[in-house]
Amino acid sequence: MHLFSENLAVEISAYYRNLALGHGVVPKVFTMVNGDGDQFLFFIDDLAMEKEEEDQFLAYIVKEHDAVAYARGTLVIVDKSGQYVEFAVVDRDDEDAIVCSAELTRDMEDKPIGLTEFDKTVVKKGSIIFGGLFVPMSLTEAKIEDFESLWDEMKPKILQRSMGI
Image (cartoon, rainbow, N blue to C red):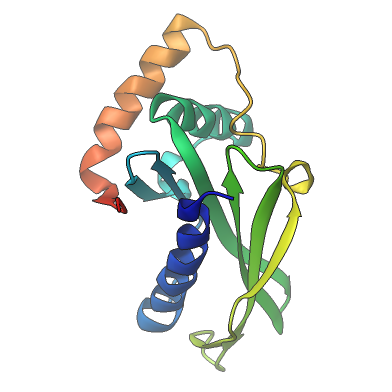
C-alpha cells in the first residue's frame, strides 16, 4: 500500500473529527493524492449530481490527476442512536483498501458531541461500492468537456495542498 494511502487514512480521521465535533457537520467528502503528493479535497454534495454521473466525474478526476490513492467518506445512519462516520481509502496499486469507521454520538438537540476512535480494517478493494474509480472508462467528448468545466468551476472551493515528501 502506498505511503499516501496510510497518510490519507490518518488525515481523513482527523478531518472528520474536526468537522463533526468542531463544526457539527459530517459531509460526504472526496479526496485524492497523486504521485507528486498533490492532494485535493472537496465535498461531494457540492456536485449535485445523480450517483452514476458523480461516479463518472470522480473517476475522471482520479484519471486526469493521475491519483495514486483516493478516499471517500460519509455519515451512515443505522437508526437514531446508531450513527457512524465511515470512509474508505483506495490505493491504485493494491488489491486491498482501508475502511475506517467511528461511532458518532449526538446530544438531545442532535448536535454531535462525541466520536469514537476510528477502527481501521483492511478489505479487498473490490468489496467497496466505490472502489472502482481507477478502472478506465470511456466518456464522450461532450462529457469530458462538461467535467473539465465543472472542475475549473470547483477549483476555488477545493482544499488543495502538497503531501510531498
